Image (cartoon, rainbow over all chains, first blue to last red; front, side, top):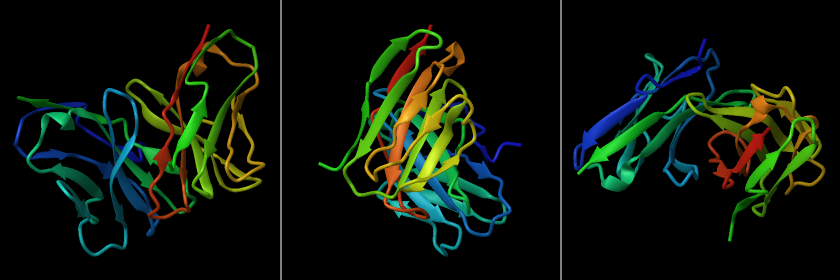
Length: 113
Length: 113
C-alpha cells in the first residue's frame, strides 16, 4: 500500500486563482513529519512547507499553507493567488520514526494565463 | 554558499562498469540521503545516513552501495550498473531529522546502456 498518495497527476488552474493539491498519507506512527516540495522544469527540488504531527496549527509560508487534517490523514497544499511561476511538479513527502522519507508520485500543476 | 554538490551531473555508461556518484555538503549536516526519480514514480529513497559510519536502507537499495566515512561526503556506488538503474539521482542533506528540511543537490542524470 502506498504511504503517500497524490491523487491528481495533473491540474490546470487559471492564474490568480487559489489551488489545492491533495496528499493523503498512511502511518501508524504517532510522530511524523510532512513536507511539500516543488520541482520546476529546471529540475531542482525546492522545499515549500513542513507540518509536524504534533503541531496544533496548520503551517503557513507566504502564499503556501498546509491544510492538515490529522484524523483524515490528509495534508493538502494550498497555494493562494497562483502565479505563472507556480507551474511545476509538486511532491508531498513524509518522514517517519525511522527517519526514512517517503515521497508521493507528484502532481504536475499548470497555471494558465 | 550553503550547498549540496553532486558529480557528475550527467553520465552515460555501459552495463557492468562500476561507477561512483559523489555527493558533498558544506553545511555540517548529519543526515544525508540518496533518491532516484523516475517518471510516474516520484522520488524513492535508496539509502540514508544519520551520521558518520551509520547508513540505512531506504525503499530501493538493491544494486547500490553507500559509505559515510566523513560527515560531508556520501558517495553512491553502483558496483555493476544495469539499464534499470537509468534514472535521475538526487542527493540531499539536513541538519538532523524531524522538522529539519532537506537541501537537495542539483541531480545526476545517469544512463546505463
